[in-house]
Image (tube, rainbow over all chains, first blue to last red):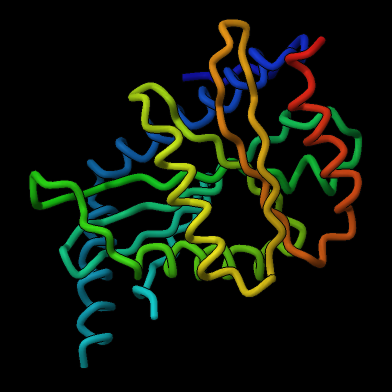
Amino acid sequence: MEVLKPQNRTADEIIRYLLDTKKQAIEESNAFSKTKEFQVVRKKLKELNKKNVL
Amino acid sequence: MYYNYYFVGGQNNSYFFETKGEVIYEIIFKPTPYLFELENIEITENTFEFSILLKYNPSLKLPSNDKKIGATVVAIFMEFYSRRNNAISVYICESSDGKELARKRKFDHWFQDYNDDTFIKVDKNLIDQNNNKFPVSLIISNSNPYEQQIFKAFVHLSLNNQK
C-alpha cells in the first residue's frame, strides 16, 4: 500500500494521510508477524520477562 | 515499574513488550515527513506517527486494565527520544470502531500518570467534511528547539477544516 502525500492540505487530506500511514504500519506489522524474526522477538520477550521475575 | 521491552528498529522504529498475561504489543514510530508543510528538515525528518498495536493475545478477552502498560509506553517514548532528541510524535485515534474517545482517554491518562515533564503534549481535533472528529495528539520533548514552530504548524493543521 502506498501512502500518498497530502496535496491540497485540507483537514480531510491530512486525516486521510494519517489514517493511511497507520493502515500501512499495521499491514507492515502483520507481515512482520509472519516472519521467523517475529518468533525471535517472542523468544527474546520471554527471556526478558524471566529476567524480570528473577 | 514497567515491562522490559525489546527494540527491533526497522523502517517503523518498532518496540515490542509482553505483559504478564502474555499479551504482546508493538509500539511504532513511523516516519510521516509530509505532515507539516514546513521547509525545516529538522522538523520534517523527525516527524513520526505513533501507533500501539496489539500483536498477540492468548485469551479471547480484551487485556485487563494493566497499569504497567502505560508506564511501558511512556518508558519507550523516553528511549526513542533519547535516540532522536528532536522527535515529534503524532497520534491519531482510530475511529472506525467508534472507540476513538476511549483510546484518547487511555492515552491521556498514561501521559498524565507517567510523564515526568520530559514531554509536552498538545491535543487537537481534526474535523472532516462530514463533521467527524478525530482526536490528534502531538508530543515533543521539552527541550525541542523548534517548539514554537511545531506548535504553530500543528494549530494550523487543526484550523484547515475551517477554510
